[in-house]
Image (spheres, rainbow, N blue to C red):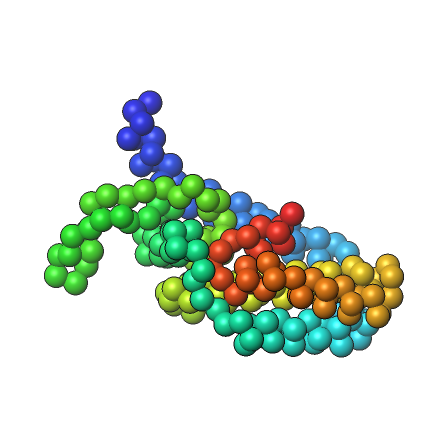
Length: 194
């Protein structure tokens, strides 16, 4: 197959493959929820105070450090890929273009060397809130909260209440966690799904 054709085909089809994969994953989550029927009230009664603590810790991290772009090449490329996904349903990013009145006509495009799933989830938030480059920080805030909540629930379940709070504080105190959580990078998002 012609390399230019395969690159164009990959760029145009990968978005839909990601969409189908995430949709199947979401349907499986809903199916498992319906199958096991967890008691949500009991869950929040048992873990609610700890989840509130986790939310406060996540807010404090974002307020104390402040969200901003920290990596010169990585974060803008991820945001550009999410913009292409939001506007064109493509996984590449525009490197060069020409303005024709009020629209940009791409001349040269480039594929990411990073996984496409992080820009795809940014794209989902774009679909809800509209396109803004700051959307990556919203996704990383949700990711930080989910990661700390999973740590709290797991540790509290097996070791007890005080150990759950201690584990959240110890993880949140790590500089790499707070720096990646308040950036637009995909590192914390990848750690959540490990």
